[in-house]
Amino acid sequence: MGVTFVTLAITAGFRSASSVLIIPLEDSFGWGREQVSLAVAINVLVYGLVAPFAAALMERFGIRRVVMSALLSVSAGAGLTIFMNAPWQLMALWGFVVGASTGSLALVFAATVANRWFVEKRGIVIGVLTASSATGQLIFLPGLSRIAEVNGWKSVSLTITFVALALLPLVWLFLKERPQDVGVLPYGAPDNWQPPAKSSMSAGALAIDTLKQASKKKDFWYLFGSFFVCGLSTNGLIGTHFIPAAHDHGMGTTTAASLLALVGVFDLVGTIASGWLTDKYDPRKLLFFYYGFRGLSLLLLPSILFASIHPSTLVFVIFYGLDWVATVPPTIMLCRTILGPERATVVYGWVFVAHQIGGAIAAFGAAVLRVQFGDYAIAFYISAVLCLITSYFVLQIAKGQSREAITT
Image (cartoon, rainbow, N blue to C red; front, side, top):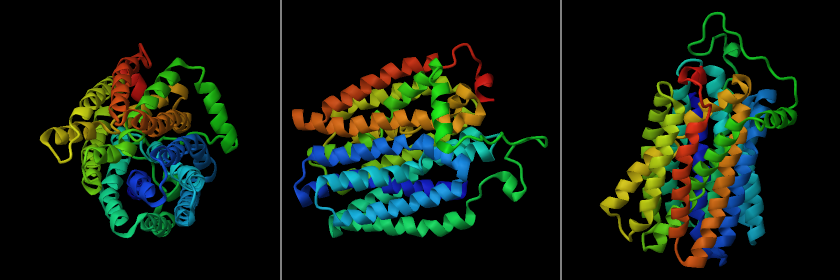
């Protein structure tokens, strides 16, 4: 769990670099915001599309091999960006290579570890591992922003390259595949516990077959739709455009990056708390409150962006931060109801695809709306309304089933 947390936190730092690079790349190459944002949108989309296949590959070939291969690809993709001179190269390297690599280190990695190593306290474990993204954001965002300002955007790419390589020995030495490999049972498992049967399908076939089976169930589409809105309203919109939006209002880039990192501080608290709550309360009701509060926060955002930090800005940072990825633990728990625990991680991989599709649409769409209307207000309002609508539909998941039936 500790190795997974560190790996996910550093990977989140890699992904947070996209919001730091938008303005430096515009200034350096003269590219339009929609061109740079399209590369970010591709990154967000590919990040999600590889998730179910990464989950299947982990089941087939092992976690350690997949994670190490992904880290090597991140290092190569980020390092090669220093030689680019055209937008299509940014889209290819940052969009496809880094997007696919970090997608293999996404929350399906956390879900795989939690499902394999924990029977009891699974919710809080997922919460802690999910919170690693906030930790990475908190550690890396201000630093990367400062590096970009002082040494230029290429230094950000090189930093990511070398940190990814430095992670390889940690993963190789300390990341274990399954509890039985070291002679222990999963946490909280009874003495007669038996591991789920390993699928005989290839990784690709397992991912595709899981999608075919899950798509026949209405609850899968409720989860798919809700996580689409989750991605649209978090990493796609705020994660990508908060710094440029604040910059539009006269706020310094480093100050805006520090505020976004502060969102990560409260996200860390909120997501761990969400994991604890998921072990105790109905995950559908938790999602109702999470999406509702997020929608209300986004409705207020256009009126509280200033050139300097005001109390209302900090109120948004606190409430939005507590809700940033609190949706993940209850969503992963609900994925177990679709096709059972054996395929829960792969089901979550497909649900996560929706998260990143929503994020990609917001990353590019918000830039287009900003170019057309001069600011991000309409993008924030659209996202807020979608969150409020979603808060109703999540209550329809597994309708008629008790909390105990869902979380077992």
